[in-house]
Length: 178
Image (cartoon, rainbow, N blue to C red; front, side, top):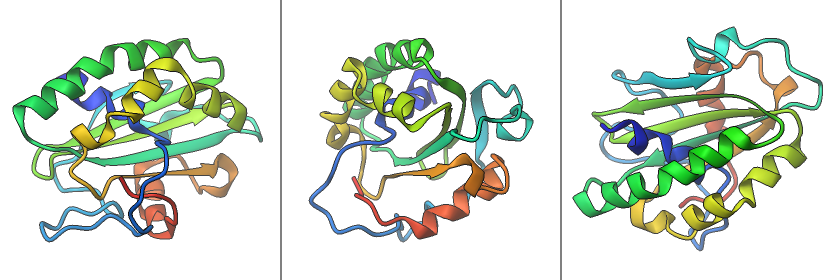
């Protein structure tokens, strides 16, 4: 798995609406949004070298966004994913209010997850509306095989920013599936 392959999932977080009915992502392969795959590894983190548990105390206004992306496996799709990722990552790290990010990947499920923490909801939405992110949203159908979702929560609503506390919260998902 290429590093950029996993990193583009940041660009797909908080993606736009879909025509599909809202539902938790699920598949017949045992790979679901509500549980980490056995081979899930943290592949990148900023603000937390070892992942979310080591992040510093957050302001009361902090917002958490998490994405579960079920990737297509074709060479063309992966190339598209790689092409989109550079500008999105650059934008992410220039974004005011971005406090941290953790990215995981699962080879067996061909999935990636992101967890970003923002000082405010406005900071998060500013990134969502940024040029490279909007371009990636427009091409999500080229990289997602369906069942991909994004969710946000006030940071204070989570017991911790540990993946074990974040992932089960996808069971409450009621937004678009892409």
